[in-house]
Amino acid sequence: MARVPMIAGNWKMNTTVGDAVKLVKTMLPELDKVSGVDKVICPPFVSLDAVKEVIRDSTVKLGAQNVFYKEKGAFTGEVSPEMLAGLCEYVIIGHSERRQYFGDTEEIIDMKIKAAIEHMLKPVFCVGESLEENEAGRTEEVLTRQLMASCERLYFFGGIVVAYEPVWAIGTGKSATSEEANKTIGFIRQLIRHRHGSEIADNVRILYGGSVTAVNIAEFDE
Image 1: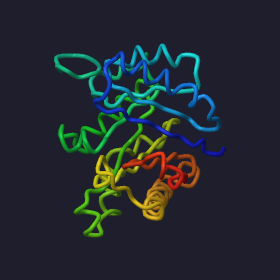
Image 2: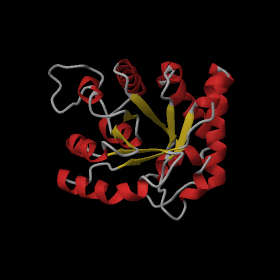
Image 3: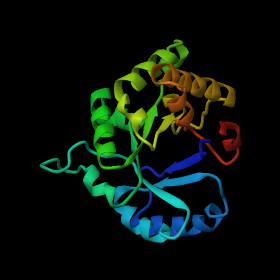
Image 4: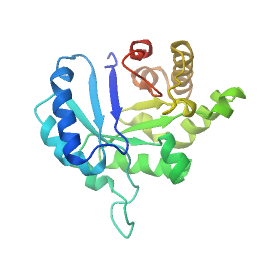
């Protein structure tokens, strides 16, 4: 079965609820014109319910930007997979900003992936190297560690999405060239093929993220 292309928008910590609703209403007419592509938007937690209502009859799918690995309890400020399960289909896990600012380790990321899958949420699992690691020629080493540490179980779940986001290209205005991105995505797919076989590797959707704009997006269509 051919992979369906996917494009996902991470809104990060931007937009109030009202602004999110206005934005998605503006986007919908254009997004619904695009066929043959899974379109996912990931607004802030506080806007998920309101945005869900707006996109209810559209072709756009909803994702969350993070999830905790416990179902409930004294974890102030966290949002559980049980809470998200009725709101959205996808959830971003392992984003570089979560790793950098909030201490998400490989162990924590693995627990989040497990919790998401158990609640039928589809993880968008982010991997990527820093500028220092890239310049030192350690990109493949870093990606191997991240992929093998955190997503053994991910490959046996139907909604498999891996997002390659070189940390040095996140919010910097600097993006990898299409040649660099496609080479690295090819390595990721080959790594999955070596570990889990061709069928799983061929079905995995691998996204690129990192200063993608309307001008350069066509270069990253795998």
